[in-house]
Length: 159
Image (cartoon, rainbow, N blue to C red):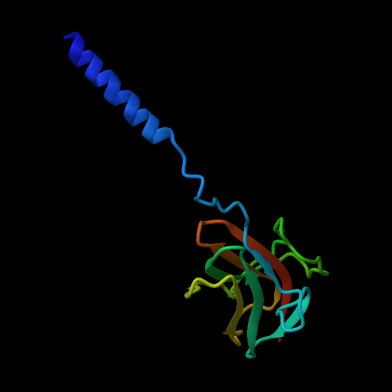
């Protein structure tokens, strides 16, 4: 019985030692990706006026220290004057109102090719029949290890 106990004790010590050892050659990504519209072609800029029926290219630069994985664009109404903790600028808002037929655009995209820098460039047509008023345009980017960054921009959709 004592030799069986010693055998299991010895095996347990070996397994624990192997499980607890670390491989220092593995680099842990502790950096979030970045996202910005603050460059010449970035769109929309804060407080931009977008006209119903027009098509606009929504553009942002995203970067990461290792590898980008995906991004999303979310355009939604701000008729209740809510805010996001990551808003770039503050704009003059219209009156609070109820949504009747708001624009809701939410799309997710994959970034292929193990890139560390990428320009988002997505055409979006503003429908003719949606509510005019205050909206948010939000970009989100995720890197290959799951870190995420986002930014929100106040825009206005007009006739």
